[in-house]
Structure formats: C-alpha cells, structure tokens
Length: 305
Image (cartoon, rainbow, N blue to C red; front, side):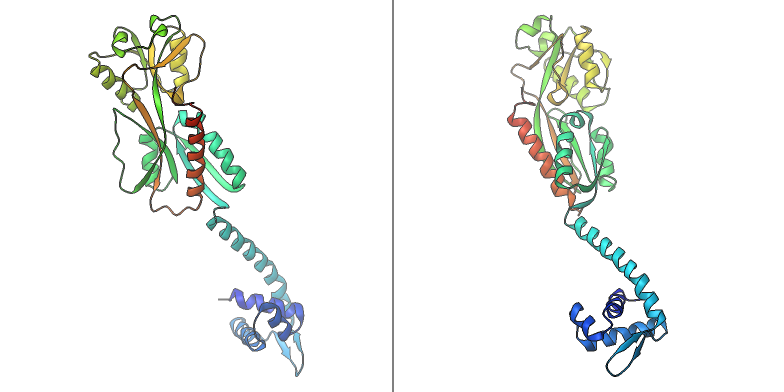
C-alpha cells in the first residue's frame, strides 16, 4: 500500500528538483527524504530518480506519479480539513426530532441561530410526538429531540439519555369569547357540562385533561379530537366546545378567550434529550441554541401567560 507521507515527499522532490530543498520545505533531513523515496520505489517496484553526485533527475514514472499524486493529495487535504471542521463542530450533520408546537414556536429561531453560526453544518428535522421520537434517539437515528411531559402524566426517561430542561409552559383553558367564563378566571368544575375538544385518545394531552377533570370531580364530555392545535382553537372559535391548550400551541384567535386555571397551576414541561454516549460535536451548539431561544421566550412571558 502506498504511503501518503511518501507520496507527498515525492511530489515535493519533483517540484523542487532536490532532496535537500524538499527536506527544507517539509521539515525533514535530507537523509529522511532519501529514505522515504527509496521506500516509495520499493513499494511501486521501479526506480523513480536517477541519482548523480550532486543532482537527481526524475524518471517518467516519477513525473506521472507526482502529477496524479498532487491531485490525490489536494483531495486528501480537503477531506482532512472537513474532518477537523466536523470535530470542531463547524461542519457535519445534526438530526433533530421535535413535536409540532415546538416546531412552530421554538425550533425555527434555534435553527436560524445554528445556521448563522455553523453555515457548513447539515441540519435535518423530523417531526413527531415524544413517544415516536424517543426510540429514534435511542437507536441513534436522531441526535437529539424535543419532548414534553405533563405534570399529571409524568415520564420515566431511559438511563441512556441525557435530559435537559428547556421551558415550563402553562396550560390554558380556551373558551368562545362570548362564553360566560371569559369574563372571570375559570374553575375547571365550572366547565363540567361543556363539550370538550381534546387531542387524540391515548396522548399525554388527552390523559392530562381526563386526570385534571377527575380531580375536579367529573369526566369531560369529549366531542371532538385533533392533535392540531390550530384545528382545536378554530373549533373553539366556532363555538362548538372548550379546550385545554399548552401555551406553545396557543395563538390569539378572534372569537376565543384563553386563561390559566384558577387555583390549579398545571404545566407542560419541555425538555431536550440526547444519548449520553453521542459524541456529535454539534450537539452542544444545538442545545445551547435551544436553551437561549427558550430563555428569551420565557423572559418575554410568551409561554407563561
């Protein structure tokens, strides 16, 4: 197998026409250069230089190898630069998983920050609920993911994961703006006779609503289900029901009124998770960007009405 160090030495000798000058440029001794050229000749099985008392002359094979070898070394140098940049976090690929409301309110600003700081990095984004993205993080198919857990629906995190908090968001009750509850801070039991709009059965949001209502002494009458909070809020605006919406999913919509529950502060907690053993150098930058965006959001009271 050809030694790239020897190839680089040969290219320099052909370029300078001298073992001594090539040695000076490469930081070797003349003897080391001579030994490397001899080793290269043994590897290819042909004499590459005609040696005379005070000069050398490259053979045709040496000229050909130097010409092609220069191209290979240039490509190798570029590859080496890319590897160093990747290790330093300047390039590489980062695969992020996130859930829909974070996709809309948190992730875009974090991605913009990352792309500005690391323009050579390739960032991929996949969207799904936490139960779907967590196995992908554990399998190494995603580098990190944004996930959530409700106060009333706690999660147990696998030991292989590092779990870092991003923000805590309020849960808001949404009612039509003409609803009597819109004039006061609402108690959950005041809404026991209402039709409810909830997320899909079995989701953490739906489970949280059921447990919250059970603690207030009733079972919610769920008339409609959707995992799209824009749909949920549009249904509220149409006057067909009330809903419990996390602050990340809330957008001010004509015909609706949103408020936190009185005396029952319940929150959804957003985390970023990654495998503890993951050595991707872009992880630190991504986590820092997400934490900064969330700090600014909380400071601006966007997610804690």
